[in-house]
Amino acid sequence: MDGTLLDLHFDNYFWQAHVPRRYAEARGLPPDIAREELMGRYHACAGTLEWYSVDFWETELELDIMALKEEVAHLIAVHPTVTDFLAAVRASGKRLVLATNAHHKSLTLKLARTSLEPHFDAIVSSHALGVAKEARGFWEKLAALEGFDPQRTLLVDDSLPALDAACDFGIRHLVAVRRPDTHQPDKDTGPYPAIDSFTELLPG
Figure 1 (cartoon, rainbow, N blue to C red):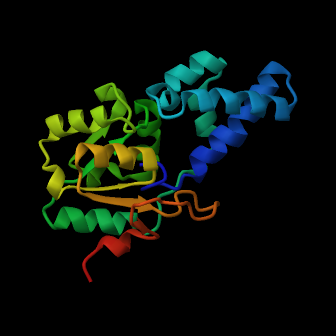
Figure 2: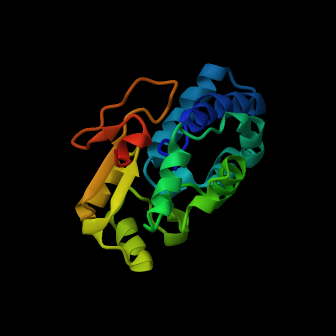
């Protein structure tokens, strides 16, 4: 979801600027010291369920993470042409599943802000499955839940570790997002074909 359907600018700004600022204020720390401390703590949790957990960070940082998200929720934005693509997939009769690492609290906020939920047949969070998308086990559990054929499945994602795990599991059609954060340069998508717009995936 984040960086694929939604502009990753919200999450990057939130964790790299907004939380450090509020953390510095709460602790009486210089902003640069607070940010350096948090970057180290983030790095230690990258790719794990804890990194994506609102509850984990509320406990770790003693901050009301969801209240802080609400403060900058106006930055939540859907990438251009996403809704056109989702509508076309639904109209074609294909099953459409949102597989996300987003914690249910963040997911609720973003779905309320974007009105994307009606486009999906199912929404599955890694927190419900107990393993992050960066692990093969996530895709194994999702396949058991959804019963999809990996050889006939398309996954679009902005995370190379998630795409690697899906590839390892056997999902055949893998596509990366070239610019997850519209305020940042294009990213290296490694061996995966990449899109600038979801219209590139539509016939014609």
